[in-house]
Length: 121
Image 1 (tube, rainbow, N blue to C red):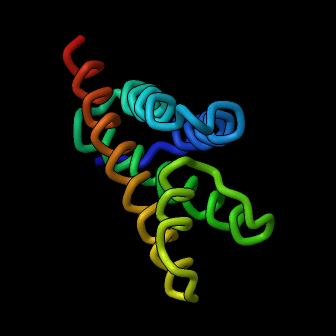
Image 2 (spheres, helix red, strand yellow; image 1 turned 90 degrees about the vertical axis):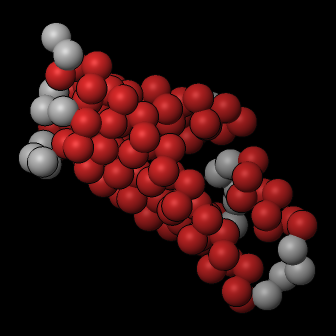
C-alpha cells in the first residue's frame, strides 16, 4: 500500500477537468479517472484504491470550496439534494458529506479495478 504522488497529481488534474468540462456526465468521467489512477499506481488493488480515494478526497475538498465560493452546483446529484430539501445550514453540510462519500466510493472502486488490471500484466 504505497501512496504515489505522480498518479495522484495527474488524477487531481483529470478529475478537475472532468468536473469542469463534463459536469452532467461526471460519474463516467470519475470512473475513468479512478481507473487511470489505479492503473498508473501498478501496485495492486489496495494501492489503487488508496491512491484513488486520496484523489477523491482532494477533488471533493476542491469541489466544496468552489461550491462555497461561487454557490454553483458542480454535479447533478448535489443540485437534486440541494433543491429538494428545505434550506437550512445543515443542508450545505449534508451536500458536502454526500459529495465526499460519493467521490471516495466511485474513485476507490474504480481505482481498485485499475490496480487489479495492471497487476495482472
